[in-house]
Structures are given as C-alpha cells and as structure tokens.
Image (tube, rainbow, N blue to C red; front, side, top):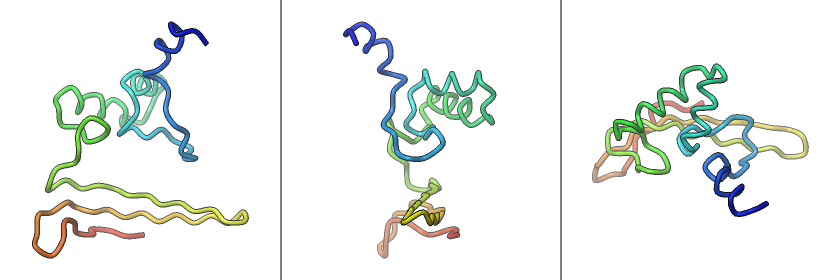
Length: 104
C-alpha cells in the first residue's frame, strides 16, 4: 500500500472489536456517511448532525455530566455467548460519578 492510498483510506478504517456493528461514536465521518447512504437506521445521520453542532460524545468529545450512556459487554466462552447492557447517567455526586438507570 502506498502512502497516498493509506492516506485516502485512513479515515474509513477502524479497529475490529468483534462486534458485528459499527460503533458510530468513534467511526469517522466517511464511514458514517457511507452508513447513512446505505440505508442506516438514522443513527449515523444523527451522529453526523450531533458532530456538526459539537454535541456528539465519542472520539472527539468526552461525555458530560447529565448524559446517559449505554455500555454493552459481550463474552463468548467455548461457543456459549452472553451479553449484558447497562444504561448509566453521569452525575457529579459525593458518593459516585454515575447512576445505573437500567441493567439487563
């Protein structure tokens, strides 16, 4: 691969996490535009819009106090897989920095 080809592709490349979906919070604009064009469920377009107004958490901005975040943990052992989801809200409290809103 030449330097020119690498430079052209760099913004569309990500690290494979094992997840079957693209993490829109860290995907580059080129990837989000491709997803939106391909008929994404609206999440890519929403992320692009939030980035354009400076309100998107992700690779370029840390989440702020008051925002809700979803955490997904997936484990596979010997062909058996389990997944857990947590929704938390960031808070600024003396007894911790987050509150669990949902767990399943």
